[in-house]
Length: 148
Image (cartoon, rainbow, N blue to C red):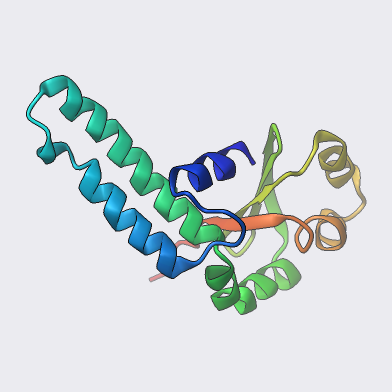
């Protein structure tokens, strides 16, 4: 949640994320903080760090935007209903779940108590569908590997 709030603050986003507004703000910030715009080496280095943060923030916010989630809803529903939980990691309030179809999703705001219930449940898939996968803000963090 901290990362979400940090990026929203950087892009001056309040409430729901609009891809159109986000793109406009992104372009303005990239122009403002492009390293080639500065002559002083210290300022150039700072601009490089800030521009990298802007790029990361943009891609992150796009991945959790309602429009992005809506476009991939069918794929997500297919993953959580047909694929099994293959692996998981929990750090702070972030749960990362890898599924057997090769996709990985991050769920924001999952506390340690709920994570323990998830791990100790008879069926992590059923518990996840009932209590986590459809209840928390999520984003696809890794794509399935392409089979040739």
